[in-house]
Image (cartoon, rainbow, N blue to C red; front, side, top):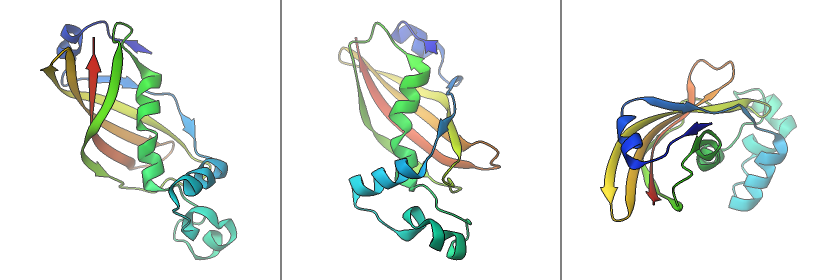
Amino acid sequence: MREIASVAELKSLVGQEVAVTDWVGISQERVNMFADATGDHQWIHLDVERSKRESPYGGTVAHGFLTLSLLPMLVESAVSMPNCRMGVNYGLNKVRFPAPVPVGSRVRARMVLLEVEDIDSGAQLTWKVTIEREGGDKPVCVAESIARRYW
């Protein structure tokens, strides 16, 4: 866990890889729950037998947006700002899903701090987050994520 105490410390980290998370498993149960939560019940995510037969991936795969939805949890698991009273997701600049996430895979995130801007009572942080699959040769998600932290 990387602990960051202040905005000044954040600013000193711009351009650097700040943290790499632990691996997180992607189970069929997680995929099914995401499908129910979002209403996206496409067979490549849910129908194990059909996916084995017909999918180019040889089995079910996680939704791209499920992978993206892990971003806050991954960041919070690897970066702590104990003096910060509140943090909010502000948005995304760019998101791509270069490779699939087969069910049963494990993923982790690498976080590079791109920018820190002062805002009232805090800072706006722009992160480049690259989510990689264990054993994969391409990232499964690359996103520019914007968060606001308030002190």
